[in-house]
Length: 221
Image 1 (cartoon, rainbow, N blue to C red):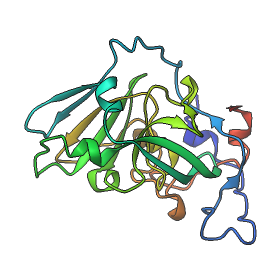
Image 2 (cartoon, one colour; image 1 turned 90 degrees about the horizontal axis):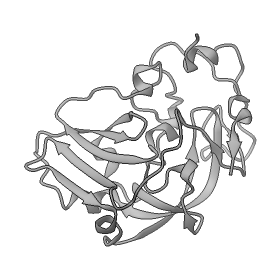
Image 3 (cartoon, rainbow, N blue to C red; image 1 turned 135 degrees about the horizontal axis):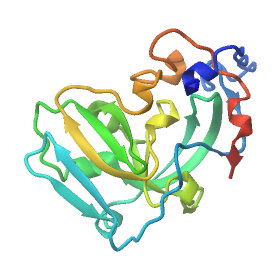
Image 4 (cartoon, rainbow, N blue to C red; image 1 turned 180 degrees about the vertical axis):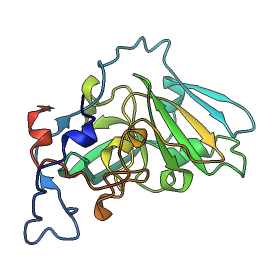
């Protein structure tokens, strides 16, 4: 069976419409919808049992309850998001807790340079710590003024809008701080390690070409 990266080999990329250069990354199509893409089943939770664990290159492991995270300062942002399957959505509104506000509560060792984000369905994705400390990096629990739907990552998802959206993991359950980088799920399966949409960092090697209609066959909110 072809991998996702291999499956998208033969199609041409869409052209950026006039006037959207600099905001719409190359090879993307603008949509008003919010496509639903993920691997595996949508998890269900008993929130009395739900936790977010932090471990690895830290002085002490920490486990947060949902209530503890909800007690942290709330931040609302409006941002554009870009999926590797070639859709982009402008002016999306999110509410959550800044990653850096959680980071301040941790005793991260100075040699830690990377984070592996762990999520349910055995998903993981890797990021440099510095990419998680910006003003728009959220542990998000609301979208467009409403609680996240299950399919979009409730009760908590990561939001890293400056990178392709697979880095914004749904259903997050832990952060593992690391000295050395290592690839996550999609990064091991043909996709780029960093994933800058404006540099079209879609793939780990040869540009396999992603069909412009890949996301049209998915569900939407």
